[in-house]
Length: 195
Image (cartoon, rainbow, N blue to C red):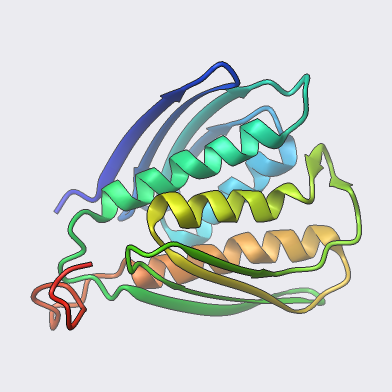
């Protein structure tokens, strides 16, 4: 089974080319023009064992909003496309991970129904060149374009870098769990018969 996706999105604000392999080994080639965001996406792919190639060119002379939100939209589309009909897929995934003093819970359901419950508190306006309010926007864009019920909850943490990086890693581990194929599941894991 080939669980990959290649998505291109071009608007007046951003140009994005993304390739995703759900069954990869964590290989990446990422360039968004926002160093800390690149670092987070590299962590996501590595800890989710997904191969990710991404080139985003956005209007960073304005701010980071369009670049990050549109990347989230395309990432969600790629997850949805790569997951295909979801036959044999576990569907649910959860993880709780620490990073120094930070502790983040992520639980998600690839249900086809979008929802974001984001309970993360950040005290700085920026980490590097990344505006911290854009973290929520990124995960919102993914959840809605992937059709994913996504819960992110901060259980502990003070350092904004640690909290954000822990959120990306925890999301990666939960997504890896949810996209795992289980030989006991012969169709889709739903009483409805479809997702």
